Amino acid sequence: MFKNITFLVLFLFSGFVFAQTTAMTNAESKAFVNKISAETKEIKTLQSDFVQTKKMDFLDKNIVTQGRMSLKSPNTLSWKYTKPYQYSIVFKENKIFINDQGKKSSVDAKSKTFEKINKLIVGSSNGKMFNDPEFSVVYLKNSTFNIAKFTPKSAQLLKYIKQIELHFPRNQTTVSQVNMTEASGDTTNIVFKNTKINAPIPASEFSL
Image (cartoon, rainbow, N blue to C red):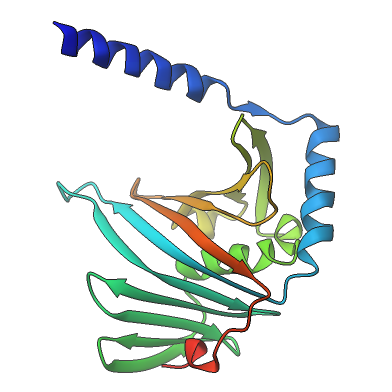
């Protein structure tokens, strides 16, 4: 009985917290965009550990991976997955370079999903994401985060991505969480931690 009551209290409390996410006013969204745009202009490099959780309808368990993301202005970005397997993706020179556990390849940066996430993350480091013509943006807030919710404008892109949310802690101007919902309903959540700004990044982080 006690366990049931505890669960009910937690359920109601979580619903209450969720309900506190509200839309920013025009003045608030303008101030938020101006602040992010101004302060991120100073970012030359950014590096962060991440935990990625992917939920797919046809799988009973979520797929959880860990790694390190490295960004170098203006548009070089790498994702290096270290657990539970070794996998690297580097975006540079309008190409995607891949190292799948020793098997290397490269393709043009035409991916409809991951390439768009990378474009927004790179844009979040220089404030340009808010002007991306491919997305409409809604600004939300709660006691913990300022949230920019991006929805594709084109029917073509909507075939792959339903929406992408970037979460900014209220006291900082870099993204700490990304939530993406694909058209299929599958979701990807990426949480960043141990973020370092303008620290030297070895060239090896952007090579395979």
